[in-house]
Structure formats: structure tokens, C-alpha cells
Length: 168
Image (tube, rainbow, N blue to C red; front, top):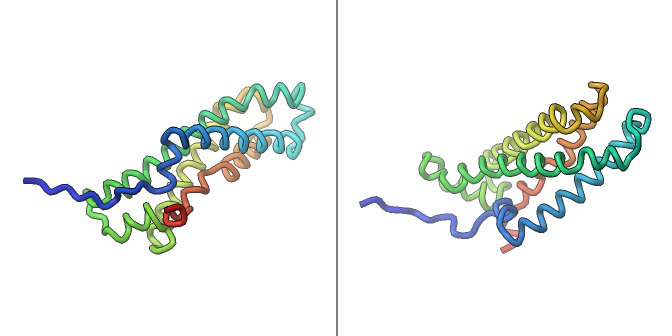
């Protein structure tokens, strides 16, 4: 008979971001942050000369930035989910999976793995925005690169580093 071990009964804080009603707060928060970054980028990178107006630039980009950014965050969270929840199956030590789920700073390898998942999300945010969202909106490749990298760095899922133990 197979024994099932359920070490992680309480989900890590980053995993809760994807469950109702928390997902509504997460989606709204992401939308606001994405909106602010798009507006700041419009002025910071002087897109007024390349765009008809801030309103048109915003309308032409916010939905894609928001949805694709959330998809990138979800992929990063899926990596952590597999490592944290199924780590025992893959032979990862309990101390590591516990750190990934509850207190990243209790284990240096957990911090590294979480940062890697964050970087996967950030790279995806960059690729999605550079190749899809701003491909037709920003003609100059250097400017498109700057806007996409700014969005990737500012909107990557920094909350993955929050220790769950702070909230329970």
C-alpha cells in the first residue's frame, strides 16, 4: 500500500494569489501596477512623438500587458508549486520544500529556486511584451526593448519572496 505524505496542508502565500476571491484582488492589483508602469514608460521613454496619444497607447497595450503578465506569473508559480508540493516525489529534502512554501530565507537554495522562478516569469513578461504587445505599437526596437525590460523588472512576481509564515 502506498503511503501519502501531506506535509504542506497550508498553501504558500504565492499560491493563494491564484484562488478566488484572492485572484480578484491579484488581478486588480496587477492591472493597477501594469497601468502605472505603462503610463510611466510612455513619458520616461518619450513615446509621445511615436504615439498619437497616451490614451491610444494605453488602450492598445494594457489588456495584453495585463493578461500576458498574469500568465507569466502563473508559469513561475507553477514551477514553485511543482517544487514545493511535489518535491518529496522528486526526492527534494523536506527542509527545501518547506522553505519554498513557507520561509524562503530559511534555506539559501530555496531563495535561489524562487528567484529562478521569478526570473522565468520576468523573461516571459519581457518576451510577451517585446514580441507581442508592443510589436506594432513601438516601431523603434531599442525603445520597445526598454519598455519591455522595464515592465519585466518592475512587474515580475516579487511576492514570491514573501514568507508565508508572516501571514499565518
